Image 1: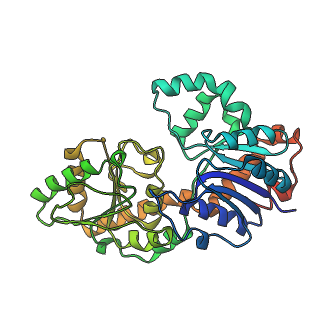
Image 2: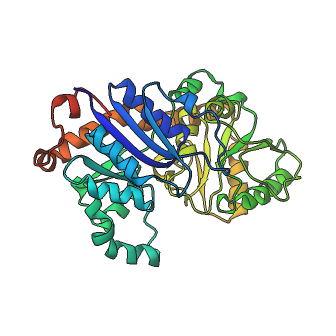
Image 3: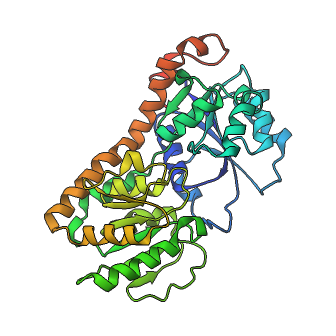
Length: 372
């Protein structure tokens, strides 16, 4: 018996395609609901990157046909339903309707920051969030702590939400770490990404570095004041272009002010890039260790970032190669094969008592041999 997985998501992405493909390769059937691509991330080739046989339903934002989607989900009869966040009311009502009929997973990448809104929300969540879900599905420790504060017990929180395409790992096996073309940033060109800090830091770095590396910036949007010697601004990249593009460069910089997780850190680590990132990145504790495979710095601190850039530039080829290997070792945590194993093991170990009492498939095919 094949495992049936329903995924209710806002917008598609390359990393979500990687998860869906891993599920299909593991023998699962997948129903996938999402919005059409947003202009901020104008994907045009996501459908080409998914396995055949996935039932895909796309909507214009705020135009979900709730009755149709609920009927589709009910007919599909998923063993597991993975829902992104709690901000789409139609998805939440479908979660409520599917209570007792599937294992409902709340996919969340929010990190606990002790903001007033989060503190208030952690009180209200007992009524407004946790009753709609059976488990929380998170990518890392900061998100784990937030899920606990929302009211999920440790046994109700699954780790390993995000993965990335196998092409990143394959690119990491063949690239020469010491011959990459300078620093690279990949992401939206938005204020929260800290690009003003990056450009200010690069100016400082370039003034003092004897042999400054170039800086390449990829992403959708506009970038003010980018006319800086050594800075090359490129356009938006489709997911299938990212592995080879990252592999051409020598180190990733992620200067974000706020970044719930940052899948780009996973992808860069899988490729084998040394990483410079802010401590604001939710993935930083898992993927960046100072001096081992990169450096962390405070957000909005161009001097600290410039110093980190200089430290990496001063590292000899052998040191860069060692950092590259270290990044690949840390990135291996997020290989699609482990994503599958983490989820099925967590369902078996932490959910056995709860799932045994609900009318969803608990056969070895659903929770063991067949994988999500």
